[in-house]
Structure formats: structure tokens, C-alpha cells
Length: 232
Image (cartoon, rainbow, N blue to C red):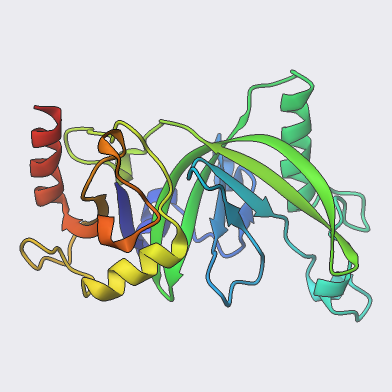
């Protein structure tokens, strides 16, 4: 079950407008936020594992004003600004390394995935467990490993607190295909409010996230009706 939301709903849930993709504990929060996309026109090559449990999130470039006139996509992604302060990459990398060194628990990260302009999905709460540096197109980038948890967020769960027994990410291209096919509305009643991406056949019964034929749009009311049947 993945909830489809507007950007305004993200703002309302977080209490601020996350204009950058990486937001380490912004607005005095005790968790971080990232915005991602796996669309063809996405600026970074974020990836989701085959089992839908792990995101490999690519670090972000510096603003052009810090790149000495060069294209930011040709410059190594730094951990520090020229002033010595940590960049967003640096803050996330520091948290990941602290976890690996057993100095702190994993940083909690809420992940929002862009479906199209103004339309997003809430992918869930993740643990930041690792960071690595890789060569990409003749420059160095940072790759952050995020592992999906079973933690819920009040703004994006059903009224009865129901969570699916096996929570996984539905691939971005599948989300887009299903949203277009079902015309952005519940297949049961046509409602466009509180829409979720729902697995027709659950994982526990052999269902998959990789085939649009197994995913449908349901409103909250019909999603709850289905969860009652699954639970019963």
C-alpha cells in the first residue's frame, strides 16, 4: 500500500516546503527527508532494489555558484563547502558513518518519490545504514543506502493504523503506469481523494510489485475494506 499525495500534503505533513532533494533534520526535526525520482528525466540515478526494500540514493551536486563556473554535473560531489561547513552530502555521510562505527542508531529518513509534476508517493520511513563513493561520468558521487522499516507516519496511514504485512516500494515506472491507466481515481468508486496504490494479490500470496496488472488505485475506504478481508 503506497499513498499518492500532492506536494501540498508533503508541506502540511512536514511543516515546511522541502525545496531541495536532501533535507538533513531540517526545521528542527529528529529525522531527515529526501525527495527522489526514478523517472527517465530524473536529475540523479536513484535506484530501488529488486525486492523493493532498499533505495540507493545518489548524493546531490553543489549549487553552481560553488563550482567556479563549471557545470555542477562535472564536479565531484563534496562533503564540505569551501567554508568548511558540511554540505547535505556531508551531513548524511556523517550520520551513515556514525552508524557503521556503532556510535549512534541509524538516521531515520522519510522518502517521497515523484510520480509527475505536483504528484508524489510516500515510500515510507527508512534507516540510513551506509554511504559509499563511486565514479560516475568522470566524477565522484556519493551513494547512500536506505533500508525500508515498518515504521508508519500518522499523516500517511489509514485511520485504523493498518499497515500491510509486507511493505515494499512499488517501482516508479509502475506507479506512473497504474496512475495513468486508472485515471488517478479509485477503481471501485471513482473517488480521487486519499488514493493508494494497492496490490491486488498480496506478497504473502505470491503477488508482485513489478507488474502493473497486480497494482490498482483504491481510495482509503475501499482499501480499508480490503484490509479487513485480508486480516479476516
